[in-house]
Image 1 (cartoon, rainbow, N blue to C red):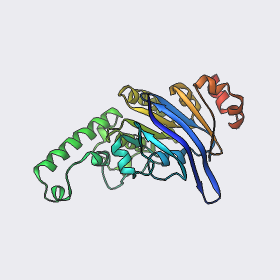
Image 2 (image 1 turned 45 degrees about the horizontal axis):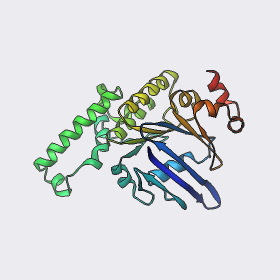
Image 3 (image 1 turned 45 degrees about the vertical axis):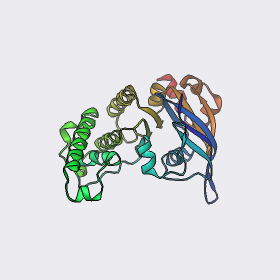
Length: 259
């Protein structure tokens, strides 16, 4: 059953056509990867799905309901969360506080409840803290909860951002180049973590340039080039698609198939 469906998405920026009629679906429980050269339109598509941009044409449906045109917080409340190419944390907050921010969309306390520290708000804050600690333990950073975000390594910042996304209780998680900037060992740990996220029942749409990770994790792969979808299939089918191999200068897919 399709959890996410994009239909004929088109987006341009001035004279630059970033996406041109892209349609595909992601089934519930699936890990689906979106690959293509730099400038292929992958991040633009993520921004359309999560409401940071609005399509010029086409639409996005999540759980059968149209979400194109909704605000980012509304889409997050519906069950879609994401990470970004460059993790953005609040440097003056500690790790735990950064993850607790992800619970904000599940909060019911209004302005006065927060301002007056009413009992309901205090209970909600305690639950948010417990949930954030669980996600930090899940990503292996439970011992860093009190550290300022400003002292973290790049790899640890990525894990904090992932914990924050998980704290929103998503049904679907969009990961935008999560392995970028990580070393070999960190990439291996990330791959295992992504598999465990799927085991929690969370559907994953992955943008990634590390073809070994893509081919090892994905149930299916969509390939974009110059804003258009040029192929879709299993990892094996994509590895043997001559057009896809030509698009990846340097033989990235061939190397992944041999690894």
